[in-house]
Length: 526
Image (cartoon, rainbow, N blue to C red):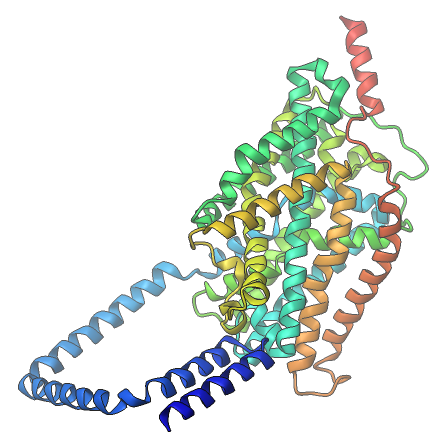
């Protein structure tokens, strides 16, 4: 009888597992517990006897030392209370500290594309659009934390699963992989463009073969720097370099302003210079959204705050977005005022190759990029690992059932197949990056297809799904407007941008006309 019951339970569990291959880890473990219970049924009486004996021994020991145990518990509670206060004071961030951490996650390499965005949208309309994008981003960041309070899950995957189940999780995983992967491609483009100019400064003869120099720079940086950092066991140590990355960006900003005030670059105005509005509003929006993208770090910063409340979070968000907008606006105004209609997707491309201050800025910018690259690679790797566990290895994944963001899991050791995934991601980005010399196109593509859905569409949809009020109620109308704005910009951007990607004739080895004139004048003076 026991054998027949055991066989029936095994078959029933097998059928359930085959029919529900997409069940969560908790359900899968429930099947295993059921199997183990039926399999070990004949050992139940023996285990119960042993457990009763152990309970009797424990009761005797507790009766012998009741007073000592009570005193020890009181001491432990006092120590824990004191230690908890010290721990919270040491590990949790104050409001200014949380604001600084958030600013580090917002202000990054994409700010050098703001002058190009102002050129695409028009200088006046571009500044208005920059304010609008900052305001909408501020609202979406606050909306994400509100979603966390509604569902009780304080992670981006958690709120998407709470709102739309496993399909919401899958959609988020796709976009979260696309965004850092395209960011890594843009990093390769930036490093290849910037460091190749520095090398030509020391080896002028290499300027005749800039394509090969650029490819060689990206290859050696990938093999010698990027791969070792991406295979680092504890990537969380690289987060300490965020201050260095921010300092590099601030130095480059001062260098750009200094060059504007010095008047070293004399650019002739054209009909497109200082135009208030242009027709390329949608691509410019993608670049600006990409520059403000920080939603994957939202809950990390929120959970690190001392006395985290919605009011304090709103203050942190307003301060951080305001500072990030100031930096982006200064970059945009200073860069556009210097080069106007000639502004490139990578602002550093506008400066002459023999400008030593800007060459030093190029080196600093490359350092900032290389410190950011491993973090983006880790996010992509963890998403691929989760999908491999789920669909290839047929194992339940903790990322689906627990409340944790893949970008926060930085301390795990790298196993063999994780190394293979890492190398595949890094070298895929390396292979794709030489296909374009235009940083602006990559920023537009990533902003429109990944950043806008992650920043606007998904948070708005999650809030609409979880908020109990009617769809067109006062509580949901702002979120609905956020979704509509993001969807319209994404659809129009894809229709405009994708057909023109292959025909783009952008090149990084072109010497700007004003640089040629300056070099000729210097030669004549000599």
